[in-house]
Length: 183
Image (cartoon, rainbow, N blue to C red):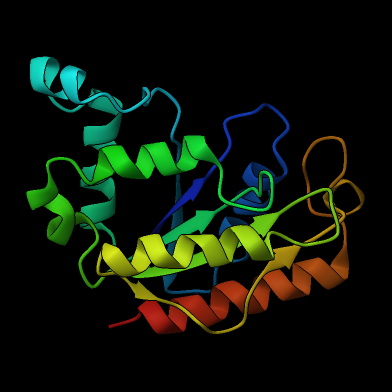
């Protein structure tokens, strides 16, 4: 069984990206389990804090979960045509100390997906993540993309994916990524 750790780049209640991550986890094919993780509780990066207290427990636990997984799924919002600072901040903590980068990210299969209420479907955010993934030495998935636009129309008030076209796209996306992750 392949294990993928999925992280949404938003901790907002009612986040479309959290909803999308849940839908993807439900649609994972047999032989692949998507475990949902969170960036909640990870403080702003501060080298002084790191020097005096070490890696925050939330960041340390997330690092260990990723290191033990076969793949990583980043479900990213798009803020001002780029990646969200809070999500990037969490990834920055996960690279500390830098000697841990190979253990956590090196050669790890990584996929990007995202949802936005706007028309762009997080294409710009996902593109901005590629430079970060490259420097971390990951193995990015360039198969079928998942860019959900007009998110308010595809999820109901409870955050359930109701649009069959998007559901089909999400199912094909996670099936492709699961095949990519499989050793």
